[in-house]
Every structure is written in structure tokens, then in C-alpha cells.
Amino acid sequence: MMGMPRMPMHGAPGMPNLLHMTFENPHWPPNHINPDNYLDYFCIQENPFYEKESNNQQARMQSAAMRVEEVLPNMTGIQYVKWKAAPPLYIVCKQHRYSPTQVTPVAYYYIVNGVIYQAPDLYSYTQSRLLSAADSLRKGFDEAMKYARYNVAKGYYWDFKGASASQGKDDEAQEEKEKPQQARSTNFQNHRTDALLKLLFDQFPPASGLEIGPRPEEQRDVDRMEVDGNVEKNGPSSSSSSSAPPTQMQPPPAR
Image (tube, rainbow, N blue to C red; front, side):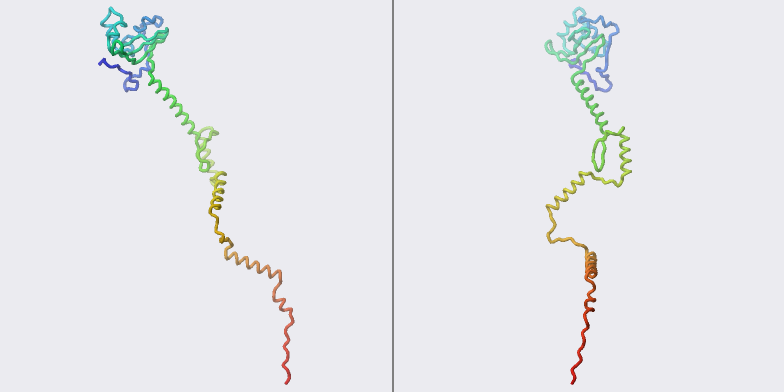
């Protein structure tokens, strides 16, 4: 049915992407193309961009006496018209005509040095730019992830000193094996722990009656040591008592 325009389906399976195709008319030398005949150069059946069911083809077959440009305004359907000529650049517009005064552009084609190209539409152009940017970002993230490291003490960090990511991972694993007794805490973590403990003691001080002393067996040892020290300093108490003269017993009175 020729009533509706056929939009190019670039992503349809089984159909070639016209944006990746070019065409050159082997029967026309590029230096023979001019602003008057470049539409005839485009409208040949070998051209993959040209629809054989278009109004241009019907006008060529039915109105041989009239120029195609004069017949197209009175027809409806797919048409190819001249858009702009700036040698060696020529632009052809593919449009759908609904009435003599109402048309809708469908696609644009340009001819440069005898080679025909399809101009990309805004959707294809934006999609190509976004895919290119996304691909560059993906490659950047993949490259950055090669230098990402994780350590229990440090957490996640970047290591750009290694020659390669695999070499860096091997070195890190070897270092962990060589130092298994290394403390897995940083200086910040140590000071932070001390600060938290001090804060807890300030908020919850110990009871005033609580005294921390030595264990009972330790206290007995301390008492024994104090007694022994006093004995050595003052001498034995039995010496003072032995130095005193013994008490003499008085004889009973005579009767």
C-alpha cells in the first residue's frame, strides 16, 4: 500500500542498515553531475535508496512529455525531490505528500563526488553518540576496576603503582601470607578506640566504694613480708625478756 511512508528500519533483522551503505552510478561520471540532472542521477532502479513504487517512477513511466518536478505536486505518496545543490554536494529529500500543500519529510540523501549516502536521522545520530559515550565509560570503569583493592585494615582503596592488575593482586596476596601476625588495625582505629573508652568511663564512672586490691593469697604474702621486715629491724622480742634478771623467791618467815 502506497498511502503511508515507509520509514527505514535500521535495526530490523534481515534488512541491511542503509546508514552503512553507499551507491555510485557506474554509468554517470561524477564530473557530469550538475544541479539540473542530479535527481536523475539518484532515481535509478539500481540505487538501493530509491523505491521503485515511488511517484517519481510512476511519473517517468506515464508522463514522458512533462518533467517529473511538474507532475509530483499533483500526486500523493512517496516522492524524491531536489533539496539543495552546492557542487560537488547535492541533497535529495524523500518525502510523503498528502496534498499539494502538505508534505512530510522522511529521509535525506546527499551526493558527494558521485557517491550517494543516506543522512542519519536525529534518533540514529543521538543513539550513536550515546553508545559511543557509554562504551568509553564502560572501558574506563573496566580499566579502573583493575586497580581496585580491598584490605581488612584499609578497606577499599586504589593501587596505581603496580605494573598490572594481576601482578598487584599476586603481590598483595603474597604480602598477606608473609605477615600473618601483623595487626589488622590502623593508627586511626587505635586512637579512636581509646577515645571511645575514655568517653564511656567519663559517662559511666565506677562506684566510689569499689576498690581494686590484690587477691587474698597475694595479701597474705605481703603481710608475711612486712612481719619479716619488722623482725629483722627490731630484733627478736625474746632477747629483751631474757636480759631481765630472774625473780628471786623469798624464804618463808621462821616460826
